[in-house]
Length: 186
Image 1 (cartoon, rainbow, N blue to C red):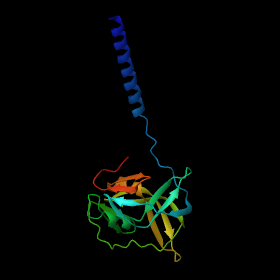
Image 2: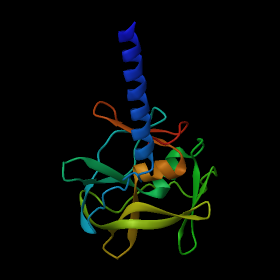
Image 3: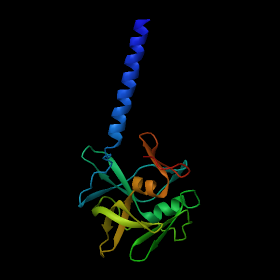
Image 4: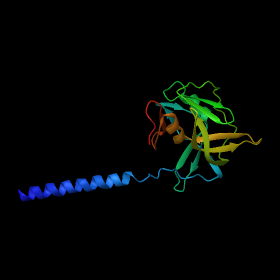
């Protein structure tokens, strides 16, 4: 009987200690900042398989390789807007000196998914502020320039998913998967 009481007391103390430690850690700010990308470098032409809600799609994408050799994919806003138009995550793209995104609104622009680049291409990159539903949002972006100096912005696919409400997944077997009916993955 004494052994049961001792075990119960020890178990209760362990639970209280665990809860106290969890509460103390909850007050600490989480370090969720993504590592900064180099200000310039070479973007790799991406040849990933991409599916949206299970349907295969194709559009130009570029990737940056991290120090461990992992790729992070970047896509043009208008390409993803065309690809997810008509879904729960659809959005409109506008420009008034700033890039404007309006969520839950059908994309009305042209289905121009062409890019003047082929193969790997130099980029300049970093944080770019975009207005989403009227609010400033910082996202990671790279800009590729054509021979006339025209810039083409490519945004980090996972950033777009978080902001616009679609989930981005990856597996070696199937490649990149975008789900527009589920909240973005954390």
